[in-house]
Length: 449
Image 1: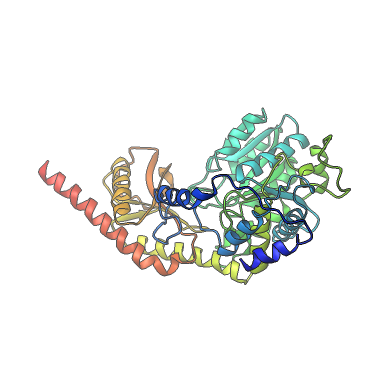
Image 2 (image 1 turned 45 degrees about the horizontal axis):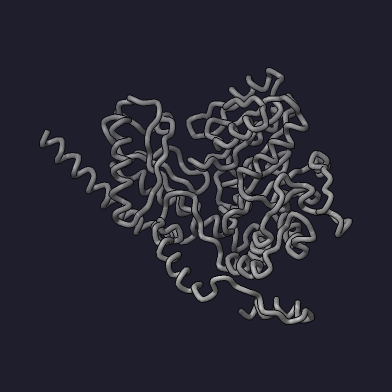
């Protein structure tokens, strides 16, 4: 409220007036009803929620967003959001600086899907009619976006650790009809990082654009505890032609806050359009002139700008340590799983996502047990996720398990909250208890049978 008073003081020269508030007398009751409705959610904010990639916004982001909503700015044009436009330009420049870009073009948008749409749309203007390639583990939106753009899309096979397979990419690129290759910097299923240095080498030979989809993993460019291969990839992300990152994932922001960046500012020419009413208040750049979206919340820019002032995007800083702690949690959880005969692990996590299955006589039985453990863990307030992934991700550790399926339903944990590290013992205890319960039921069923 002290901040609100300061904000109000900036408009003290206006004549006083009392705004009409329809339904004012019922606001408190309406909020109570809403609070009750919102209880029907998983506890995304709690460390025992270790399922999907849901990370609570930082308190300063929530407060800055709420503060900006007293004005409700629109960052489409300077007329609608002068202050928040400046905040967005500054905040986006700070994100670009993580990748060594000093004179790039970029802006915020509703999320990774919209950001990837813009990146691939620009790519389609640079290489009209040419094919878009992404790995089989890339986000499904790339194929959808290609269809929207009426461009051919083709999936590149992955290797046994979820990364784009380079021999396959080399053969496909050699056909000469590839305009853009999407390098996924942290897949949403496993957190695998495509081998960007090798993709860059192929670009030198074949001339395609590289779009780095860092919607999930983009902030890990700041982390100093990555493995060798992931470190090599992130060290060269600044050589991509475009980058997408989602501040509403690891960036501590509320939904929806995505960001698209272009290394070459001149691609702004593809957005050129005229509006009879929007762009006459200033000769300066309006964000709506470099965006496919029109109206966008200036509050999202205020929240991001404030968060980055409190927690700068720098290696070794407090923000970066939060990323490193999440990765440490994933490694600790992976180590426990690997030492327990009840579970089969896939490859070691590259970021902060762990995938595993219960040991069983066959792939199909392991899939069934995964579903049952998922339900049993939820009853103990431990919330995991499930994913359907290629069986080959586990090939090195399956032993005598019968391979009666090309894919397997696995359990998946996204350990992206810094608090997850200290909660690993509790997470493990609940998982272990749920697994004992399910395996006990299974053994009883077998004896009865």
